Structures are given as C-alpha cells and as structure tokens.
Length: 275
Image 1 (tube, rainbow, N blue to C red):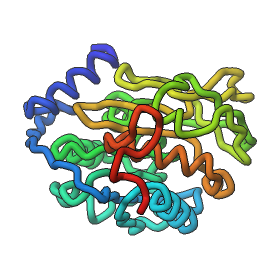
Image 2: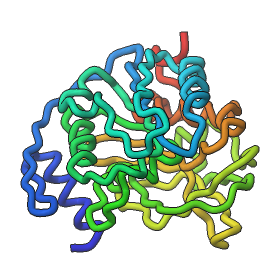
Image 3: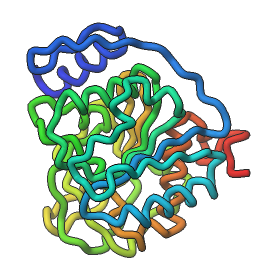
C-alpha cells in the first residue's frame, strides 16, 4: 500500500470509528464531537530539547492573546526532556477540555508508536484542531514505516539546514491565512527544515529556498486529517524571529483558521478578535 492509500485508510478508519491495525495491533477508536465556544480554550504544549521554550511559551501565549480572544493553558511539564511523555496525554479524555492545541515541542526522543497514536486518536475523537510549530515536525517521527504523526500534521521532515535567515514566499496568497501576513518575508534568523514528503491531505501555503538543498522547502501549510484541521509552520527556532509581528500574526491566523474562526479576508470572525 502506498503512502497516500495508507493515509486515506487510516483517516477513514478514524472517521468511521473502526479499528486501526498498526504493527499487528487492533486499536478501537471512539468518536464524539465537542463544539467550540468563545473565547477559544487553547492548550499550549511546549518543551523538549534544543530550543528556548521558557521564553517561547510566553512569546506565543502573549502574542496569541493580543490577537485572539483566547484562554491559554500552558503545559511545560516536559522541561528540556526530548523524550518526555507528559502526564496530560496519559488520560484518553485529555482533549475534551480544549478547543485547540498548539504544539511547540521537540520530542524527537519519543520512540513509542502506541503513545503517538493515542495523541492523534484524542484529536480525532474530540475533533480538536491543532497548530504545530517548528520542531513539532521532528517529534514522534522515528517510525517511518507507520508515520502516524506526519499523516496527522501533513508533512514529513527529518533534518534541517544551517542556521541563516531565509525569505518566505507565498504559494497561495489568496488563502485567508496568507492574507493575514505580509509576504515575501525575510526572517531575522532561521533554521530551514527539509520537507521530504507532503501528504495528499496537506496544502502548502508558502516556501523558502534552501541554500543547503538547492531547492525550495515548504515552510507553511494546512492539513485536514479525519475531519481535524491542522495548521503548521517549520519557522520558529529563534526567539528573535518568533517575536516579530509577522510571525505572531501568522500564528494567530493559523490558530483562527484551525478553529474555523478566520474569515476569507484573513480577519478574525466576529467575536474571535482579542478583547
């Protein structure tokens, strides 16, 4: 079975509530839907290695609150542990309390496929959208033969290029998310990820040229997995980039799009703007 067919089969099983077969295991998947309410109840999961998550959790939380009517819960239990399995994710019903989850993590040391599947199942069961930032793309992705996490987020990556600024250019300038930011955009600093696969459910919105690869690399995208909206960007290694208005406008637009609260012009839907 090719990757596109595998993704479709997995998503179909999730949607219908049927069992998913992974490594010979049959996993039953319950389904029910949680309606969104205002203000958005946002969970920011952060932590792991190689990044300044102490500073970034505040940059992101304050930046989102300044642009979106949101109540933000921060889970930084992992600290700098790249192999962390946070307590919250041990409860199968953890997603019930939130309208959206932002992942700014680097859990590249987690090598537990069942654990990763359980996180994805929670998103699908409760139809909770997600925003994935930078090293979240390199998290939970060790198992290339069963890429549950990459199917959920929409892209796959295993390496990055050297740290230099790069220019981000829109591929879909009319998309509501891209209308919320000014493009092209030269990042103050950067760590460009090499994308080895874009899943059929994903839509690239922007890219940047990689000097190391000699090719353009997708930097911003959306994905729809088993009814769940996911917004992703590989941009965000450095605090100086994350602190810019352009970056925070992008993340806020991604949050609103994922929560289905962004209008066609890139503005917050009525009642979703910051108070």
